[in-house]
Length: 318
Image (cartoon, rainbow, N blue to C red; front, side, top):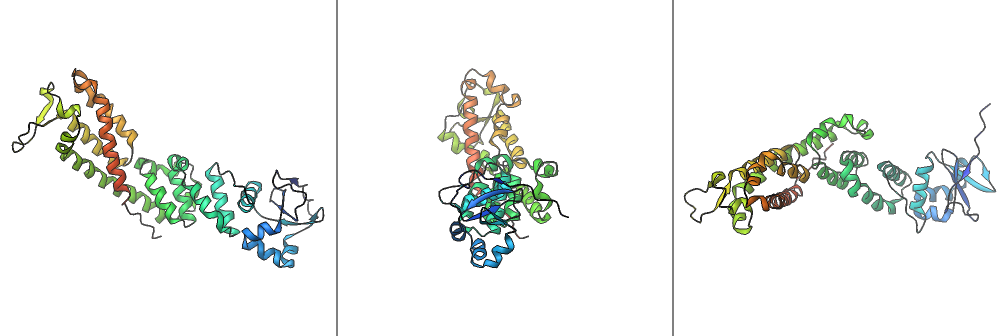
């Protein structure tokens, strides 16, 4: 003799309407009172089910208050997301990546195509990209959302490469299902852009005379730091010069972006490093503006790297 089914509990509004004509019961026995017409318009799967009476009978083990009960395999949260995607004037609260993942799964299973753009935007929201780009990438790849995979791959450039290698220690459950090629392509993408980013910084530093004429940075104009200035080559006679400590700073940035390509925070950390600021902070002229000037340099370099990242190509052949 099978165990009796536990009593169901009613869902919250708006799924508690007394005039509903069907009940969707979640796997954890929560009853959502809905309208067949709404479900049929939003989902071809439900439309087919309600068109064929036998399908409804097979899905309905019983009735509740005279209404057919359609049992589904999804839990309360997933059903709530699904029905809010179908219910006019409501949208689900996709507050976590787990919520987004459930939304993707139910929207695809029940073919609620009209909701896909909403869920895809939620997947690549700044909050998720900033905090868990790797998991966003994994979810996107598993659901064949290639545009979102590219967006999240670019966001991963804000992570140090070491974090990608250490992904097995991070809570990214989707990695267990992700094809190995998809993960390796992301690591290669990160490494390839890091290798390309360093020459971009180097090229900027080699063309610093352009910026010396455009900006009044202390490391281009200070005449007091004669012990730390390096003259330009003899064929440039405009008297421009650059501080040696600044060249050392740019070299450090080059090394940093190899491992952490789009990381303004790490560059700012370098800018405040005593190894680079010791000399300018001793200078009565430089110390007034050195922090501000280096921050401006970082913004210039970051902008160049961001522009280059837009052209980076992710291999999605897996």
